[in-house]
Image 1: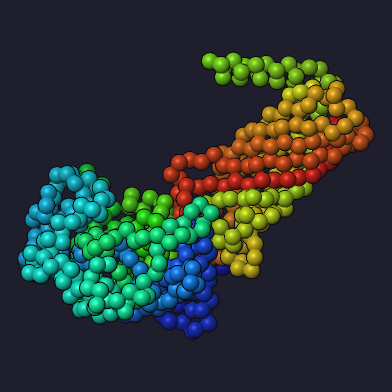
Image 2: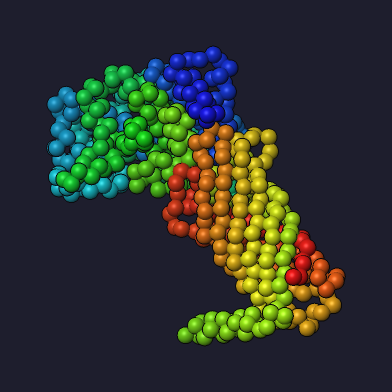
Length: 329
Length: 200
């Protein structure tokens, strides 16, 4: 009974804007959970945000963006978002598809665009799921062909359009243009079994279709809101992107066009993760029916490693299970 | 082949030791209290409590021959996942039921002194933890093993004291993650106890 009451408060807090006290009670506790999980997996610095239909509903930084200099993380700390980059790439590609400049069944490299975005291989009527972000490389060229600009310029244009003011299109983007922002870039850490962090290097060295974007949770929140408002992509495109491909035998595959898609007790979940080994990890978990999204960015790989997220079930992550469990009851 | 022979020898020894007339075997019941230490887990540990000390109570029922014996050990540690001031875990416990082989120093050599022994076996580890929101509940039974040792000293024919230290660990099933752990599900800890030893 108590659980039901708490869950009701949690859901109503974010959806109906209950009085501040109830909101604080649930979200403070939610923050305590995140901080505790962060400590257990050995993430030095983490920034979290919950995004509603129109804006950030809650955000909180945890730990340190630089442990040695005791620099606390902030809500505008920049992180490498690694695999989350592919959600913006998918948006660029799907816009080209909407404009008729690309076809999902057109080829990009040795696969179709649909196969690349859904991480599938094999015949069209018998696709097989194989999560390998490095396969997405030809999508950069496809975007470039569509827009007539380089992939980085196309990505930068999307970031500008979304007013993602802190985002940087790749670690090797123009140093003059982005130097002041990169002061806020979290230091990456490798964390040993005793949870001791030591400075490391980010895995991504340039912008690709699958990695390399640098952003804050606030930047990603803007992208999330625009997706929810259906301003970036048409509703039918989003419906297609956020649905599971099926095999000939009717089996659902876990990855839609740019996002993982799954169900939890009838509740759709749209999610994606990023991983830079020994350096960074990230995760977005969206509940489209409730217009709620959790965004987590971290400066070690503890948010994702060693969990088997690439198999397609986000609920193996206690971070995701906490969010989904709390806000779907 | 050598391993099989060794196993047969141990089993034969156990049968011989335990198969002797009832009067020759030492039947003991040992209620105990103790604490845990050195805990490690990948299960969600919201209060950062597993590594800290927690009280344990339990009882061991042992049948000791001259050298070899068996025991059944039941123990419970309430509040195993609770600690500190966060109070993210509302209720928790760890309960173990283990069946063990015991190897002790021969009885005739320790008639008037402490009788040391080593012990090891398999059993079940039941873990419960209910968190504040009830979204990361743990209620699982794991196959587990324990290994350790101790010493028993009798002050009368029937009553004695027993000290015991054992390490408990679940048998890891590779890749088992169900959203309530940060890696393959693991739990291990040491348990130190002191108890009465009662012959019956």
